[in-house]
Image (cartoon, rainbow, N blue to C red; front, side):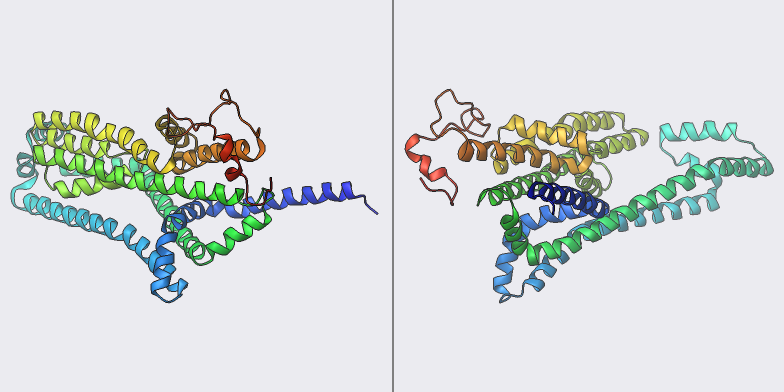
Length: 387
């Protein structure tokens, strides 16, 4: 008969093994599930109110919220795609009509100054005979065909991965909204922490994730508006289109809205407007580029209840360590650490803290929560403790 200690060790090993296997199962959907948990925390209040109005039909409420998320993703993307397709089609028709009526030389003459000079120089270097031209084109196609095929394959794979993660996120979001309360109660019941401590950590996660998500969307809107102002000043063609692209690019930290402004500046330069291009380049670098580093930490600080410097470095550190999803993971990891420190200081620390006790960072008095007065110490203990 195995001893109690041996049984505990074997059971602990089995738990670790099950956690490892569970991680392998969840890994393919990890990003989607994580984003679904974040969105569920953000929209749970709306889900509760909507369920009341629907007389307890929580499945319908969750379905409506998931549908709204789908529309919020697809409608702007579909609009931008339709605009791009229309512009490309119009440009192709113009090029075809010009070449048929005036030839290649007539098309070159209608190009902007800097581009026209480059095209004329290229035409002078190209073979003049049709047979030689066909041979040159075939050589270029055969040379660059493999590169183009790899690029297309990579783009298709990336698009498929994004679509897969988005689908998994929507499915997980639906179940988190419908059964999230039961899941939270189950986690609280099996948690080895004291009563209320697990819920406190989860509330901290919800507050931080909501603040970071809201700050990211608002910051993207501010950057897109700043970019739109620059586009209107220099009269960039289709400013609303470029402003919409800037909004979506602002949601991608590795790209950012400033790159859209720089692309517009390059287009203005090649179309014969060098001063407008210079203004846009400076505007995109100084105004649009710095908005992200100023507005986002200020907005996230309000919901995270942390010092601005902690918010700033947690955003940058998470981005550097985990990529795009690190914008959420970084602040969540820092919030998790600070929540544990706060719980330990309250429930496991010294009962009578002295003025020299080290404070935990916070939004007040220079980023520190001072120790509570001794007479209020009884209000800070966990619900299950007695004095």
